[in-house]
Image 1: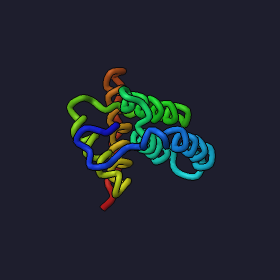
Image 2: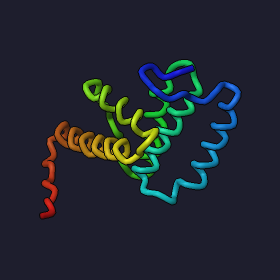
Image 3: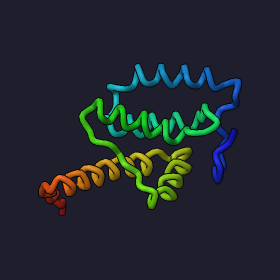
Image 4: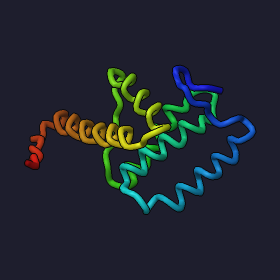
Length: 131
C-alpha cells in the first residue's frame, strides 16, 4: 500500500496490527496530555500514516478527528474540496514537522465555526489583534 504523491511509506501489512495497537495505547495515554485540537490533528496524522485499509483511510481519519473534537466540545474541522491539495501537502509535511498541519486543522475548526454562525445568521465576533 502507498499514498499517491507521497514520498513516505505506510505501515507494512504485517505491522498494521501492531501499529494500530500502539495507536490505541497512545490514545489512552496521551488524550489528556495535550490540547484537544493538537490531539485531534495528531490522531488524524497517526492513523493516516498507518493507512490500514485499501480505501477510505482519509475519511476514517477525518471521522476520528472530528469525533474527538466533538467529544471535547469543539465543532467539526471541515476540509472543503478546494483545500484538499493544501490539506494533503500539510499531511505530507507532517512527516517532518507537525505544527503546520496542527495549525491547518485549528484554522479549519475556526472557519467551520464561522460558517455555521453565518448559516445560523449569528454575528461573528471580532478577535482582538495583538500588537
